[in-house]
Image 1: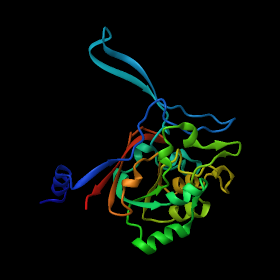
Image 2: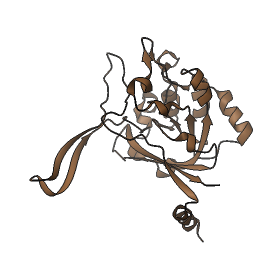
Image 3: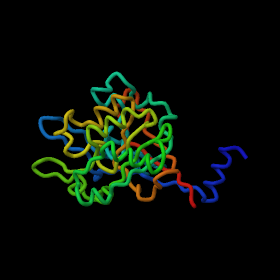
Image 4: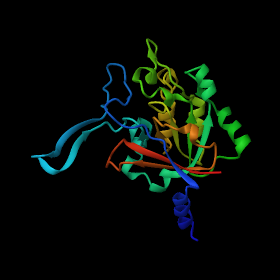
Length: 258
């Protein structure tokens, strides 16, 4: 049996499960809100074209308006100034969008401190336990934050100091950006940087270093508690928007059942 035939059979008999890691996208889905004077993106809105009526008696369809960076979405290199000469979302090689998923679980730490950030020692400790990061992998940061997703207020978790959400430190972002095995970094929060990353030097280091190194971001993930630390395969499916800085994305994990 060929490799692909074996995968198809495993999907059919349930020995491989397809997990949806995507936040459902609606007008209520929390999106990033930048402070003044910066402009903000929009969420999703639907405009009816026809609905089994005089405008289309046998069909229903809508026009959509949505920001590139709304809901679960991919950040392409051209989203950030350090990657402005890099790939737009349509130019990312498909092979970079399918790869091993490795999970770093810091949900207990985040429950104690919403401003928790990943440092190089957290990646090094993972490798000491599980081995080197596999080629073309996606590092997924499990924090438990997706449990807040039903409420924009608790999900964004902002006060007068700005949002308080977990992320990655400057040194941690540099470590990931410098690792040739990494294709992307995925999080449960609204963006790939920590809520307080505007106070870091440089600001927003996940964007600054990862997108500048031809690596990709993936946000607003769910169900990471069902993804094993190793062994799953991630499938990232953004729209190939020509010249796009990112795209709303369906993210799936293929998980082999024990």
